[in-house]
Image (tube, rainbow, N blue to C red):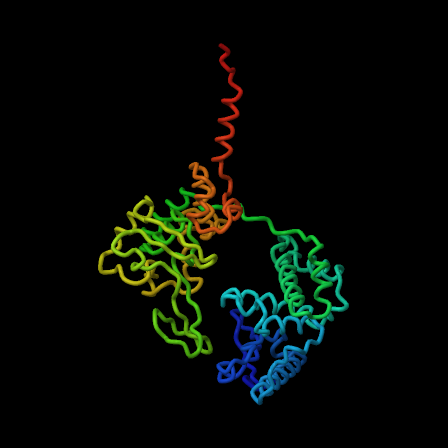
Length: 412
C-alpha cells in the first residue's frame, strides 16, 4: 500500500471509520495558479485493486502538475472531443462564462461537473444523442432508497448543466456542440416542482419566542428582519468569501483550516448601515438591486432591536452569540433549525421560506405586485409572483367584485 502523500496522495477519515483518498496539488503551485487543487479518488482504500487505481491516478495528476510547473500550460485551442475535454475548457478558458461566476456558485457548479466527468467524461460528443441524455436523466432521478421519492431535482440539474456546457461549446466554436445544444433545446424533461412552503407570521412569532428563551437574540432578530423586509438570508447575516491571494487583509477575517484560504465577512447588515436611526438602503447580493427599509416600522423587529445595548451596536447587526463573530457558513441554518423544531415549525419549512412568507402576506394585505417587487429587490414581477404561495388577496377581491356585480341593478 503506498504511503500517504505519495505522488500527492492524502487520505482522510469518514465518520464510520473508513477512509477516502484524495490527490492534493502542491500549495506553492496552487498559489501560482494551478488547478485543480484537490481531486477526490473514488476507489476503495485498502483494497488491492483500488490501491492500484489510486496510485495510477495520483501519478497521472502529479505528472500533469509538474509539467505545468515546468512551463507547460493548457492550450485552449486543443480539444479532444470528449465531455471531460469540454468541461476542462469550460472551467479554464478565460473567455468562458464560468470565469465570471461568484465563488460559491463556482463551488456548486464544480460539484455537479465532477459528477458528470466521473460518470460520462470519456464519452465522445460525436457519439451522443437524445437516447443518451434520456437514459442519464432517468438514471439520475432514481430514488436513493427503493421506497424513496424520485430525485427529479438532481436529474434536472444534470440536464441543465449539460445545456450550459454545450452553450459554452457553441460560443467557443467546438465541434458537435451546436448539434447537441439543439437536441437539448428541443427536448423536454420533467422539472422539479416549485416550492410551496412558506414561513408565515405564526411560525415567526413562535420562533422568536423560543429563540429568546434559548438566549439567541441573533436568530430572533435575523429571522424577524428576513420576514418583515422580505430579504434573503445572506443579505441580512452576510457571508464569508475567500480572500484572493495577495489582496489586502482588512475587515472581519476568519482564518481557514489547513489548505483553505482566509475568508472575509461581507454583504451583511451592519449597525453603520442604520446610522443614527433605523432605516437603511442596501444593494442586494443576487441582483444588485437597491432595497430600502425602516426597521422601526416593522412590529416584529423594533422590540428586538431595543434589546441590543448601545455598547453592542458596532459591526455586524447579526452576530453568533456562541462564537462572538458573524455566523460561520452553515452555522446559522443549523442553529435556526434547532430553534425551529422547538417552535413546532415543520422540517419542510426552511429559513429561506421567510421571503415567500413576506411576499404572500403582502399580497394578501392588498399591496400591488409591482410595489412588492420593488420592496424585495426583484428585477421582474414574474419572479415576485412565483414567491407568492397561496395568497388570497386577489382572489378575495375578485370574489367580492363578482358578488357585487350579481346584485340586482336599480331600475329607475
